[in-house]
Image 1 (cartoon, rainbow, N blue to C red):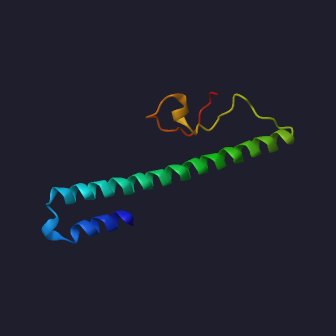
Image 2 (cartoon, rainbow, N blue to C red; image 1 turned 60 degrees about the horizontal axis):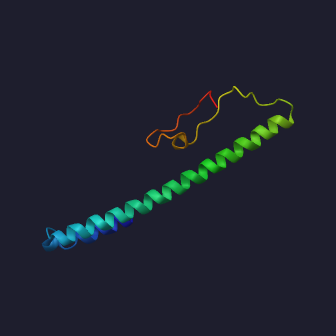
Image 3 (tube, rainbow, N blue to C red; image 1 turned 135 degrees about the vertical axis):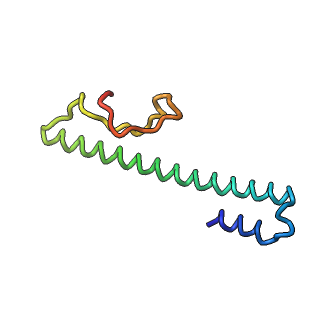
Length: 98
């Protein structure tokens, strides 16, 4: 929505659209909007991962209390490939290594 507003404001004055300072202002505003959106998305993903980890720990504790125990060699959800020193890696669904 903020991005739409920034673009609409830049397009509202057709006689000034080609002015380099207006183009620079549009680029700066767009970058700020995108940075804010990325920050919000990142926070939501971090919150979701924290909740997932909490749920997994609770599930593991519940299984442990039932006497089922957790198989250490079983698959583990990989939730942060970046922590493995691969900043450009995407998380994989399952990993059988610890």
